[in-house]
Amino acid sequence: DVNVMYNLGFSYLQTGQYSLSISIFDSVLKYKADFAEAYFNIGLSYFNSGNNTDAAISFKKAIEVKPNYYDSYVNLGGLYLNIKNFEESIKYNLKAIEIDPKNFKAYCYLGLVYYNLNQIQNSIKYLNKAIDLDSTDAVSYKVLALIYQNLGNNEKAKIYFDKTAELEHK
Image 1 (cartoon, rainbow, N blue to C red):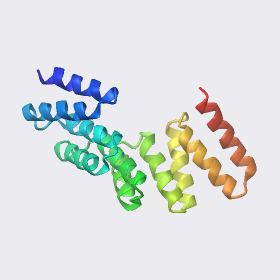
Image 2 (image 1 turned 45 degrees about the vertical axis):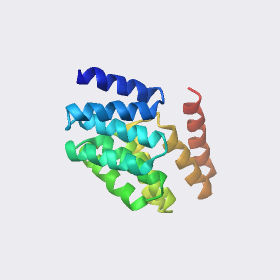
Image 3 (image 1 turned 45 degrees about the horizontal axis):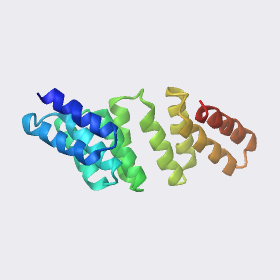
Image 4 (image 1 turned 90 degrees about the vertical axis):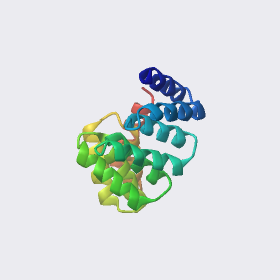
């Protein structure tokens, strides 16, 4: 049964057995070629094992099958952020926001992209939006703390560092 195989692949993914996970999801796709979630999870397996090229291919294949697949867009945005391809990261994160404007992760990634590009006002805008959507997002608070520290606004930096510490110790 395809669902049993999918669940087995997902179990392997969750336990860090990425090559087994990929193998099982590939088998699932032989029976159900339009199973976007299988492509997505293959992408996660590749990403978690450090294979960004094949991860990107798999996330894009999931989007081919399911064009408004938010998770694939945001994961591509995060992947391209990690490899410092900021233009592609911006493109995929903006598409993720277009699909799901209430999900914080793409805003956080855009904040990080703009921080790396030294576009501080854009970074602040997107990080604040991420926090508005998810006030438990320690990453956004931490980057804002660093920004305000670099700007010499130590009072604001302390507020954000304190919030980061509070969230990281929950």
